Image (cartoon, rainbow, N blue to C red; front, side, top):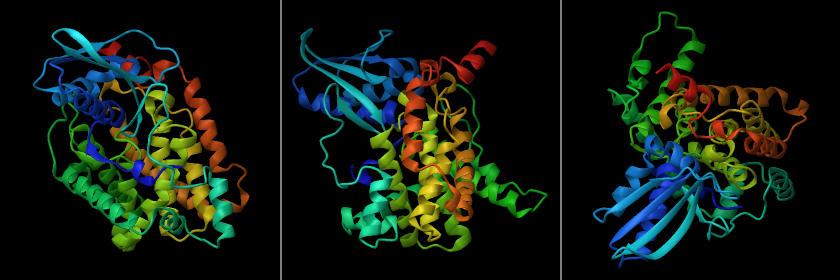
Length: 402
């Protein structure tokens, strides 16, 4: 299994698979062909259908600038290819001098068609939660965060501290920002008003909801506004993990050093899901993005509350199980509706999943590995209209309403 560094990437929104991945591919391709005087980029599948809303064309043009670049939104359906596929063509005096087919597989990662996902080495010998749990029990390791340090080395904490600071910055900036998000839907930023609103009912449960939701909105709105965020595991689901961890720090007094231990545990869940299923909405629906983010957040909280390995696993499993079948149908291809609100709902679900794990671990029948496989099977069998194409569900109904 790969390093958890592959899960947490700092970048600009709104989409890790539709902007960060294609941007990386375009940059590498341009460096490979410095003699080119023009480029053509052909987008397929989800990249074609929601590329304008997600900013795919914009970031590619920015990378290739000032050279002329033609963006083609193809309607061709590629067989045996990832839904996020693009062809990059280098031109010189009108003649093709280079070609590369790239798949943007989620979380900002790319792979060349027909080749392994990434050249980065495996860091963890274990590839399932069951294997991790067996190893930890054999080595008398009680915490996932200790397991992470054993495999990644002590420098992982410096990396995670930078990640946590970026997450906190995104919350702070999102809580200060006001106005309308770009894209034409006229979606107002709500994080600041949500955070500052003084409810007449000072019920503790309502106040908890208000704070967590405001934090999730803040980060998700920063993402939608092309701000700097951390993939956790993707841009579209970037608000869940920081929201629950910031609330835990505010209310329980956890230090930054403790918080990054939670991030380490969350990273393991994200890495397992990425390896054994998917974190791509275009491949497996929103359950792969928001569902994974919710599982990561639940595991992080369980780690912080010093629950045992079984409880951490159960928290992650509950969080994922109750997102099975969640579709990805962004209105107008923008990462705004229902994406922003969905981050807040998932953050609250993560809290509930962690609480259930505290009480009910000994009674469970489903493992995280099982629910992860179920998510992948469910995702690949979802109708393509509900996998980040904006052709079904809310996106279709909204378009008809207009």
